Structures are given as C-alpha cells and as structure tokens.
Amino acid sequence: MGLFGRLLSDARTAIKVLRNGLRTRRRRNEANRFAATDPRPIPGSIQIGVYFADTRVNLYQIRQWYAPLAELAKHRGVAIIARSPGAYLTLREESPVPVLYLRTVTDIEGFLEQQDLATMLYVNQNIKNFQMFRYGRMWHVFINHGESDKIYMTSNQYKAYDYAFVAGQAALDRLAKKLWNYDVANRVIAIGRPQSDHLVDHVPFAGNGRTVVFYAPTWEGDRPTMAYGSIASHGVALAEAVIASPGHRLIYRPHPRSGVNSREYREANQQIQRMIAAADPAAGHLFDAGGELGWQIAVADVQVTDISAMVYDRLATGKPLVVTRPASPTAEVDESGFLASAEWMSTADLADPLGFLDRVITDEASRSNLAFWANHHFGDTTPGSSTARFHAAIDLLVERWQEQAATHVDQPRVEHDALDDEDDSDEESVPQAD
Image 1 (cartoon, rainbow, N blue to C red):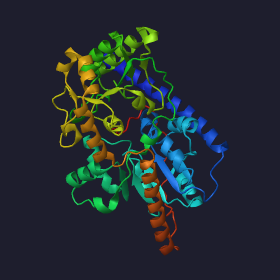
Image 2 (cartoon, rainbow, N blue to C red):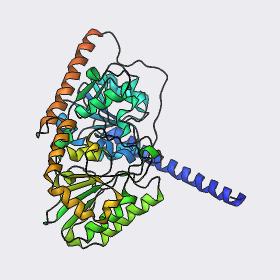
Image 3 (tube, rainbow, N blue to C red):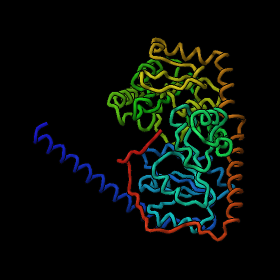
Image 4 (tube, rainbow, N blue to C red):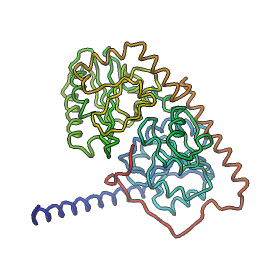
C-alpha cells in the first residue's frame, strides 16, 4: 500500500471513529433523558437484579430470559441493569420487567444503597461483570443464555460467581469433569430450562399443511475451535431443497452475528434471505429476525441447527432434531454426551437433505434417543417444572442472603471509593459472545 493508500485508509478510519462517537453521544443523551424521567423502582422493592453490561449486538442473550423473568416478577421484585446506552434504549422498549440505565459506578452504588438486593444474575461472561463483582453483600449468580456442549460451557470463569444455575445432570457432569477444584455440589443448582415453559406463549405462524423445517444456524465463530457455523457449508443447499419442495416450509433464523468475521458466511446468509424473498408467498417460507425465540422451536416438525444452545432448546421438547457436522476440521466437538448419538448432517448428506430430514422425523429409535437425552440434560420437562425449580433456586438464595445479612448488620452494602468508571460502549464494541 502506497502513501496515498495509507492516507486514504487513515481518513476512512478517522471518519468511522467520528461517526461512532457522534452516534454514541446521541444515544447516551437519549438514554439520559429517559433515565431521568422514567419511574424508578420504589426503594427496597427490588430483590433480584439482572446485570447486562453488554451492547445491543448481544441482546439475544437476555431476550431469552424475558418470559422467565416476567414470571419471577410476580413473586419477587426484579429489575435489569443496563450499562450501554444502546442496549438500555432497546431493553426499555422490550423488557417485561423494569430496566435501569446505570452508566457509572456511582449510579450503581446509588441504586444498591436504595434496594435490598439479594441476588444479581448474569447471562454472559462479559468482562464488565467484574465491575459488579466488587459488591460483596449479594449473591452473584451465572445463569448463562442456554445449554450446550460448546467449550464456553466449561469456562473457568464459573468460579468467579457465588453460584451458577444450570440445566441438569449433563451440565453438572460437564463442570465436574472439566473444572479443577470447583465445588459443583454446593455452588451449582440445576433448574432445567424455564424458557421451555413459554415456547407457545406467542405463535404468529398459521399452519398450511407443509412439513416445517426450522433452520437455526449459529455464527461462524471468532476462533478456529468454535467454527461451528453451517450457513456457508450446509445452509444454501439445505434452503434450496426445502424451498423447492411443494411439501416443506422453511423458517430460517440465523444467529444475529452471522457474517461479522467471514465474507463467505455473510454472503451465504444473504443468498438464503434472497431465496426466501423470491419464493412463492403461499408456501410461507420465513426469514425470522424477530426478538422472540421459542414458538419456532414449538411449531417445527424438525429442527436443523449447529453445535450451540439451540440444540438443547430443541432437545428439551423431545421433538426431531438434526445437528450439522462442522465442515471446519479445527472445530472442537465434544461427543461425550448427547452429541455422541445425535442425528448428524454432514455435507455429504446434502445430496438428499429432504430424505435425510424425513427419515429423522419418522424414526422411532431417534425419538426414543431424544427422550433419554432430554431427561439427562433437563430433568423433568413437564410443563411448569423448570419454572418451579427456577423459583425455588431463587427462594433458596434469598433465604441464604437473609441469614447472611442478619449476621452482618453493621457492614455497609457499598464500600465507596474513587472509582467512577463510565460505560459509553455501543455496537461498535463487540465483547465475548457464545
């Protein structure tokens, strides 16, 4: 690259930085206006906090908790704490529970001094979670944003939390096997999958007699060991076959980050969307980028997904499920659990993808296998069971908090210091994501 090329590149970078700064300033000002006028929770009314320090690009991680949090709020005071102005603006429009914009550490301390917060929940491993960890008079609980066999699910970061809520026996076994010197028996509580109790709350999808194929691929990943995405390797051929069939109907819901690191992946994603847009409207094929996830899992006759939490969201229903075999030889695949007996779709199976899917739908042995693994991963999947376990786990921690608080009555909740870290991050910042 010559001098002119470097100058041009520098100018483009400077313009991008300026635009991002102006956009962030606008969002921050808008967030400040709403935060100053929106009603705030009554002091002493919030017992359960949900800390979301991430940006809008990862809102999918907390969206799947909306319904369980709304149900919990019938029994306990619940509020979401947002640090990013963009995330806050979206959350305040979507969330069924109160959302607070606490941009600075001083804002957080003011909120904590007003509330008897017993438990703070975390849906991801964002590094900014550690800004909240400094407050010791509450339980810090990792609830994650899904059950899967990704290597993310055994991160040593689990040890930073007082407790973790997991789905079931598979997660308990996974953590016990992978993490050194981690007290799984006393620090991990199995609650099932409370989201599964709300899958059919809203179904904006009228049936038309076709076999519904729900294709929900993950993104391409940010490192070779997590290259699980199938859009470029499987997706186009699969979508072509389903769309061309007079007896099948496609729901295509790619991961929100699909294509952020790979041009090939991005172009394949766009190609599938164009195919759906050009298809016969009467077929009802759908590109789904909506905020709600659950009804798609409930209505599908078969689900095709990559190694991700989407595998286990579907597994909890016990209905036909296909997992794509990663085309990347560097992708790390743990086949010691359910994936050891999953219905794997390799690129070779794309010679007849509809035949493959139809076999899975009708095969009784496959259904029996799914039922076994659903119990192993989630325990009792009877409707309402996971919600009951989630509430019981929260009640247990509140009771333990009350016992601790009673023995430390002279200890202040907040130890003030000079730290006043602001958070102006927005979509241009892409933190760790599963």
